[in-house]
Length: 358
Image (cartoon, rainbow, N blue to C red; front, side):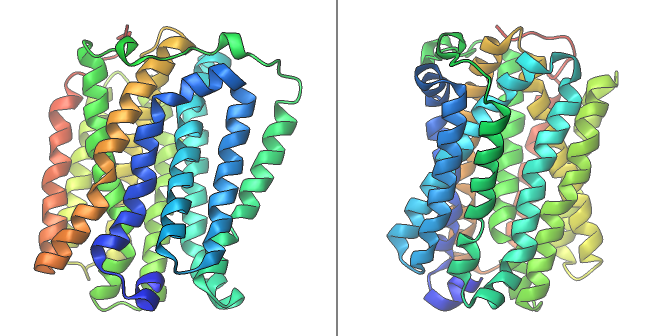
């Protein structure tokens, strides 16, 4: 909202600023194992953190469209590398605690997003501009790089142990792989739409920018609780598909409430939406490790799932922006998202326990 107020850019372009990094996550996903195979996992993760810090620093340039798009692309590259390697690391190092490990790293990602949402507006007031506030987040990226290098200081190069994933090697004929990918794709379409438009939608419905930013922070932060609990629960329960289906129905119902009665208990509705939406995705991330026989299998499944998921989800913020430019109706937008959410239900049927994707 701050960027749009200063620049006057339309909703479609503002949506594109979210589309670009998500598209980058999908485009770069196939190349992540190859990159790690050439330079080693430690160097690949380090490169991702350097790219993230560089992209955030670029935002000091302010309202320059090309620079902001380049910054967004670097964000997509860094997240693609980190997201592509973490499931394999979990499968290799924490095979007996996959549910807990997935919970912790998913919660860490959501916690970072929540902090960014909650603190960027106050930082903008403190530093004298939204560009400086956004660039501030390069500092945690540098700190994460230092922590990673310290943790991995005794790790060998491992170039030969990282699987090179080729397009033809992905599990294209496996129904479980497709079901998991479909679930993640639809979930991400909704999530990235909300990530881009939660704050603007509430601001346009009469709330102050500060309150809209608070709502966005609550939306992103509430997912931490789901990330810390649902993957571990999913790993233990015998009714996992019921748990998945419950998150889908809860998410759709929350979106209907936002569409029709946006002023009714908005904090409660956003918490429910975040818990069900983020919880479903966190559980599906755990499946990337569980459904694989080894780290190599996890790399192949992750590459397939992330490529399709993020490529398909990338365009949702732009599409929502285009719809708003055309019809200017948040009721229609959130009603459509509620319907899209239910498309996850057929995929849930195939998410059986004990499957191994080959």
